[in-house]
Length: 188
Image 1 (cartoon, one colour):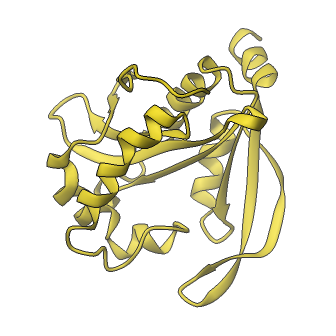
Image 2: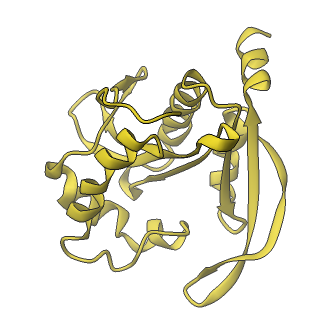
Image 3: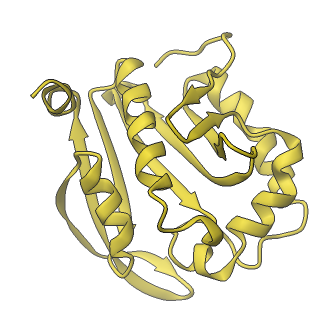
């Protein structure tokens, strides 16, 4: 993906709207992402979430989009417009690949939102011309691995002690999908 001056698109699924984060989302990000259960099962979300930290995080998104380095979307329910989580792609243009990452707030767990949003983001990424999209999860969070499997990713392996969370090294499972596998799954 090359740099662009076009605005980041809004994506829609049957139950969700994936849109750029806005400053008005900051308090909800800090509340939902900062929940211990969410922070505990992700590699990069802090706990406690620093007050004002979401405003700064959201402010980085336009530059990341326009530079072609990635896209970050708020996951919002179509009905009621409630923020339920976040999802994005960190793009490596040289390799035509991206890393998928997501989080869902605890009140919205077990509704299939992560799978629905991830499927839309994978389609978006391949529409940008990516060849490969990968995702990782802490092995003690198998629910995240099930999301990856549901969207057609296959496990490539387990990286032993690859992440440090709460001063403890943890194993990380890595999954990926190639554009040709995604196209075959859509057709076949």
